[in-house]
Length: 421
Image 1 (cartoon, rainbow, N blue to C red):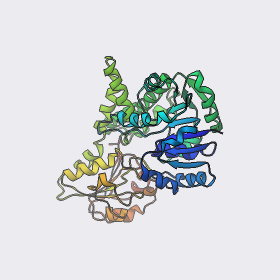
Image 2: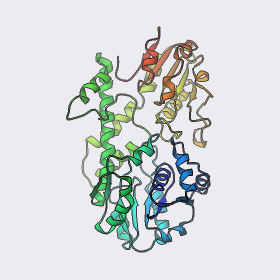
Image 3: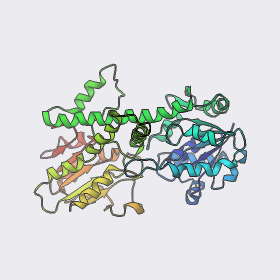
Image 4: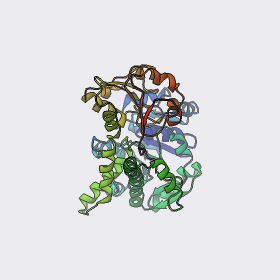
């Protein structure tokens, strides 16, 4: 059993700390005292199913504690850096913000300590830190979490990728072996590149199928059927990231696309494909807005209900949400917006301009269109016949086909989705 410290306690860090407390003695370290106070009471900084209960279990077993004092690092066997790297409006990582916090804690570590980096930082970060701190061992393990399914993703990974020097490997084996997944060992630079390449490939898949969907809408094809045909090809496979629908959002995938694009610029290597991924996705981000404007052309003082504000289900974060962008764009166009999300009762200080209502009924009543923005299971179970009957015009815009089965059998409904005429 190791004495393990997790640095950075937003989504990645709080999940990592809670899960690893099943196997090691874990101290969570973050310089935001309000975050520490909440965690010590068993409350995670954002909604993630099962996370609060797992944190409380770790605290009760004396396996998990939280602090804002880096002095606690003196006895740690391994420091795991788990900051969720911030991104700006153009998906560029705020590297100085993360590096300043890393550098703040390194002087407190004893010689020979292993530092495992799972924060999304550019390839070469381990080498740069090692050159400045040769008394420490730096390694990389790309994070593989998904908001809303993070605990399962952490505890049941298909494999764990670790980039490390031979000197760091024994401690890392002791850390990760209890998870029970195969470990793929490689050099730190390769592990760092795996994260960039993996997210960029997933982003490429999303952008590709959505461009196919855009073409399908104009020629009578159904992109969902096209995707089914693609996945039936053994060289592609059923689990391929080929689901026509909304754009990728939240910053996670786009961050790595931008990182590789900027790496090409830095190395003076001309790249055509990778930068085009973000360009394609940015064009697709306006699909909902275009469909609303087309559907409501000529409607005086249109009212639009937006269901789902978080960029992914089972979370309450509004970070880089396409739904938020849609609301703001509609408001700028003079449209009345009513937004509802089952996990968001109040908006944070950055999103006070989003008109939030208390229920789906309040959002939809009298509206001229309803836009389904988040793949929330709750939306499928609504009494859609009653909801649509309360609308001024029964128009449903549903990029990801969340309510398709519930809505399309109803009479006189205009149902619009990505990739279908």
